Image 1: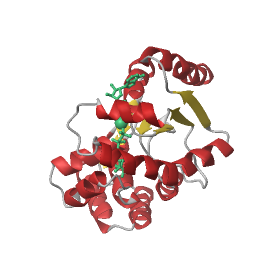
Image 2: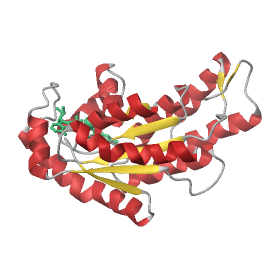
Image 3: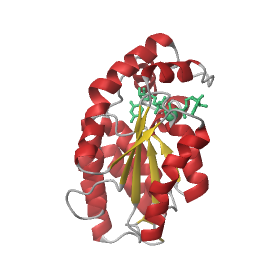
Length: 242
Ligand SMILES: Nc1ncnc2c1ncn2[C@@H]1O[C@H](COP(=O)(O)OP(=O)(O)O)[C@@H](O)[C@H]1O
Ligand SMILES: O=c1ccn([C@@H]2O[C@H](COP(=O)(O)OP(=O)(O)O)[C@@H](O)[C@H]2O)c(=O)[nH]1
Ligand SMILES: [Mg+2]
């Protein structure tokens, strides 16, 4: 659980915030941190976070399986796409840029997405995180791993588990076109662009974690329950260990 303290933070915490802000290359992050310090500081967490990245093409079933993982294993679910859509809905300064990027099937700058994920993690009482639909590029991956390393005061910190929902393109297109959530990117034109982006930018991330021995590939065809039976043992093994 993230430990909250009532008084102003220690210099360690201030320097953590300053380092994070400079890594993210944004003063906004720092000023937000200072405002949080005044209210009730978010200090480094007591438990080491357990981080799972949930990757796969559009419509491969990431969100659907995350719901089941949350129900069964008690993770906090952070969907990068949902966080970005929330920014659009809240008409934040980045909202218009995010909307255009999503419509085009492109990737929002890492600085924006990492900041949203980091904020959610800091606010969560959980220490087990499912990060759904992120990292989508090598640049996303490096930005996030830098933040993780700073949190844990060590270099080269990586996620504990990376799930890859491997699904044929034809099936992904069919599912996305039937998704019916009113999303601006669930149309044939944008899906084609998203599949190209997935191949060019996201597959290298998947290959990276495969080489690191962190990747668990799930055959994402079949019923939702059948697919979950491939997912379940992965987390069950960690429960036994932990
Ligand atoms: N195993 C499955 N078989 C058929 N449809 C599925 C399956 N899993 C998810 N879906 C449906 O496919 C669509 C995309 O699933 P979703 O979980 O949103 O994927 P992603 O988050 O990877 O884009 C949703 O409408 C969902 O209900
Ligand atoms: O880390 C992320 C996650 C999502 N997106 C954008 O948000 C869209 C929708 O992402 P989401 O994960 O919701 O889509 P899904 O794969 O679940 O269909 C993507 O196509 C990208 O344009 C992004 O730029 N960076
Ligand atoms: Mg999704």
